[in-house]
Every structure is written in structure tokens, then in C-alpha cells.
Image 1 (tube, helix red, strand yellow):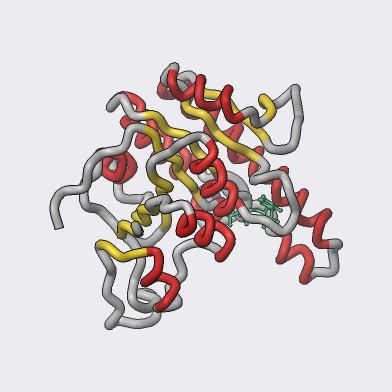
Image 2: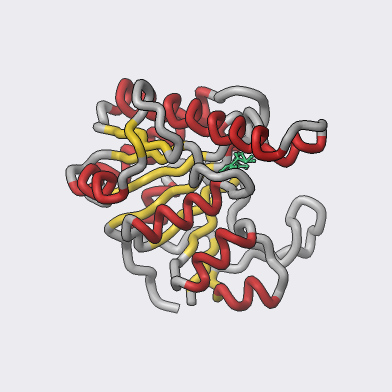
Length: 239
Ligand code: UDP
């Protein structure tokens, strides 16, 4: 396998669980690491948009298990993602002096712009970081799906899935010591081997539209810019 080529525009998907450092709320240390790494990407001249999950506050499926109406619970989850977006925006602007815009799939004019794809592209072209909140704006979907959909709609060349593990493994590395990490794999092989990269809706969107996915460890400093430059980190899922 030769060197991977770099990307001009990427979408970074961050899980809410990461963002909260494993707890409830936002972990400033994680936000700081993410912000520093995003600033490196902008400095490299590449364009970056971000989708953040909301699992550090609420997940619809978990609230449903406690008796809540699923759609209402999902809206709580979507609103939770917006808090993460604002926290990231604040760090990016105040610590790194980057221009940022938050666009949400549920309109809330006082807090963020509405999701307008062409406008998002213009922001990116001007070197701004665009942060997408509220997922795709519909119950029963996930922020992984929002990441895949936004990446496709605004013309990103790769979906970067930042995780707490180094990549995609043959088995769960936390429970199986023989688990090995793939450096490259195809979308089809992921399906055939029943590996878990993203949820099914998100993954099939990527597979059907040949969107490459890079799974890598967020907590290794500098990994985001490495992924954008096309360095061989984590697992590359491609067609
Ligand atoms: N959600 C939703 N529609 C979307 C995106 C998110 O209903 O398009 C809700 C859903 O309840 C989900 C919650 O928001 O559980 C938080 O998002 P997600 O679970 O994807 O966050 P992550 O696991 O990445 O932190």
C-alpha cells in the first residue's frame, strides 16, 4: 500500500461520550485537545467541518428505556449536541482565534445559523470551521448519520471518525487480547465481517456513495491533522 493522499475538505465526527471525558457535561481537557488539533488542520490549509454527538448529556434510546416518549427523547438528544457545539465554538474562537459558525438542523436563530449547505460551503472556503448541531434534525437518526449526510452534501472527501480507540479491530480490543487492528479495509468487508464502524444508516450512506471513512484515536495529539494530510493512522475504510 502506498501513501494515502491528503484531503482538501473533511468532516470530523466526534462522539459526545468523548467530549464529556466519560462523564456528564463537557470535559475542558478534551475540548482543548480537539480545538488545538482542529486549529492545526485550519493552519494546514485544509477545510474542516465538525459534527458532535450528544451522548455526554442524553441519548434518546436510553431515555426511552426509562419510559420516555422516543421522539421527545430524541429531540432532547439533538438539543444536547448543540451545547457541545457551543462549547467547541467557544474554545476555537477564544483560544485559537479561529472563525467558526455553528449551523443547526433545528432552527434556533439566537444561538446558531440554520443548516444551509451552500452557506456552509462558503464558510469553509473562507477558512471558517463549520460545526453542525442537532444531528439531521429528525428523531430515530444519529449523529453518525448526520456526519455521513453532511459530508456527502457539502462535498467532503472523507469522514473522520474520532474515537477512544486506535481504529477498527478484528474483535473488541478491550475484551479480546488477540484483537488486531486493520489499517485498510473495504466497506464491503466491514459489512461481511460484521464489524462495527458507525451505525447501519450512517455506514450504508458512506458505502453507497463511496465515502472513505478514517477511524482513529482522538486522544493521540496531532492525529486529526495527520488524518487530513493522508498519513497512515488508524483504519481507512474505502471502496
Ligand atoms: N439524535 C436524533 N437525530 C439525529 C441525531 C441525534 O434523534 O439526527 C438524538 C438521539 O436521541 C441520539 C442523541 O440525539 O441518541 C445524541 O446523539 P448520538 O447518540 O448520535 O450522540 P453520540 O453517541 O455520538 O454522542
